[in-house]
Image (cartoon, rainbow, N blue to C red; front, side, top):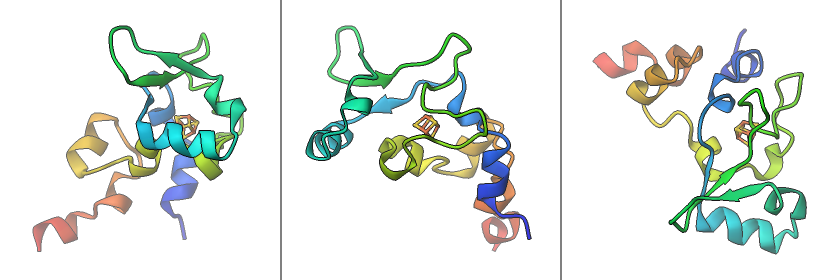
Length: 109
Ligand code: SF4
C-alpha cells in the first residue's frame, strides 16, 4: 500500500522553491536542543522578525537530501510539519499526495 510518506519522498515539491518560514517556537526549540546546524542555516527577513531557512542555488531547501529525505526530520520547522494545511493549500503546491491527505469522500460527506 502506498502511503503519503512514500509519495512525499519521491516528490518534495514543497521543499523546492518555497519560503520555509521559521517561527519563534522553532527558534526556541532549536536553541533548547542546541541545534547550531539549524540555527546557522537561517536567513533573517529584511524588516521583520521572521526568518527563513536558506536555499541552495537550485532553490531547494538546504536540508533536502538527494534521496528526498529531510535531514532535520527530527526537528524540522513547524510549517513543514503542518504542510499541507488543507486541500486548497495542497492543490496550490501541486501536492501529489493530496488525495491521501484530504480524500474527496471525506470532503463530500
Ligand atoms: S526542513 Fe525538511 S521538510 Fe522542511 S523544506 Fe527543508 S527539507 Fe523540506
